[in-house]
Length: 298
Image 1 (cartoon, rainbow, N blue to C red):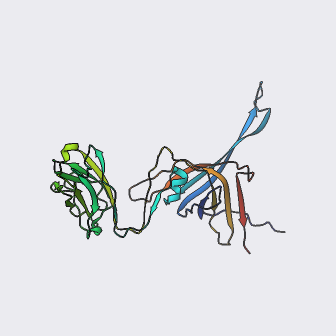
Image 2: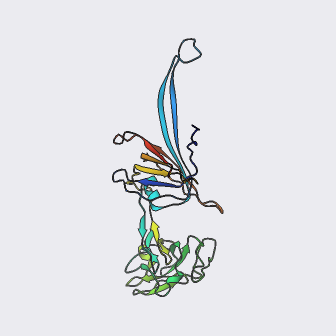
Image 3: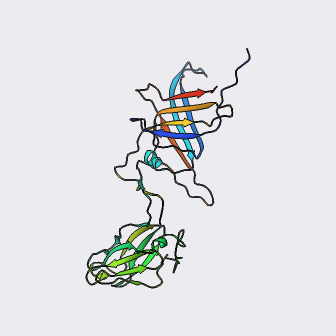
């Protein structure tokens, strides 16, 4: 009888984490550079006297370390590695704007300040993907600044006015009696208070408030990482090798995994790659750390 063909592993196909309580999958990662499970053991030597060699050797701990390298950033990855599930937003046919929020001093006031920032009807296509700062110039005027020009040409082209990222060529006048003033070319307008506007009454010249906008979109997500109540969960995971030309397949099922942290890289003219290290450990219910399956279909 001839020797059998050796069992081999080629490539990586997917990484699919799952909830260890329900067994339900969080999702799957397909844009993988690598996924490896390192089983690194140690030995404990008994030494003594003048012997140059151990008198006895016993097993020490085995470290089960999972290394992942991937180039996609799905919502569930923030949950299992950073402890916070993002908010997945439905399509926004008219874009969106966040609430105007005081940053320094007091600008937001329904009577004597800026009551709100809103999308200007008919100018939805001018909305950019950016964060904005509104700064008090005088008792009735403000300048507006924008965080990045990455999306500045969407709809009506915007333009920076100086190196401080100011986008208003001249200060905007906040109008009395709930009047509105447009931030020209950016799809939003500022609504004044219901009374007489006096931005330096509750606040002062130089005070600021912020808001953000999103353009018309098919989907979006928001997440704040690092909250005091965030908890990184344990999870299970299925790692699948690439199917070989002869249809052989290999699968590893990790019963309990814990990984804390996930880098988010921005590199010049390169796809972002996240390299994550996690620990696989013992599951008393399944009496093991992982299982492995291989099949050669007929």
